[in-house]
Image (cartoon, rainbow, N blue to C red; front, side, top):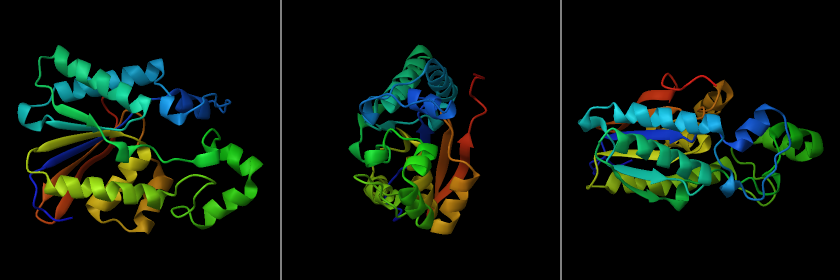
Length: 229
């Protein structure tokens, strides 16, 4: 990534717990028509509020001056609750916009199926994914490499941005993971190891500092600010 822009500090927040996350955790049926409309749970709202308090407590030179938000409802709600805390603390509000490139991985026909349900009902598809976890596309969906390809344009925009110093991205665990790959030049093997160790949790904060030749990770999957369920 070329270091020509002025974005010195980058934050990525995963949205708070959604009704889909809660259903997967409880091994319950997933009941929604469109993944884009999945909302936060009450816990997810508390998590997002806690994220907002964390940002509101930062020194002025650490606060984001631009927010890029996924178009999915759970991410939009998360940003709105963060913004509410900034406003309540009388902090300067950053500019913000919905970025269509940072939506969650589209899982096509498997959209409403948990990984366990895919393994049970579509063992051949599960086997294909096991053989190529980054390149596998579920029927009608995208691979993780497709997610990374979408993000390349976002990272390129950050490199060319001369208007902002600190950017916050509010999105999804896959977005956080592949931002790490692109910003830190991680190999596929390293990315898979990160995924195996556990993806960024709901309401977690990941951050990077710009260096001469890329971005240095400051914190990954930070959750110390979060409330207990």
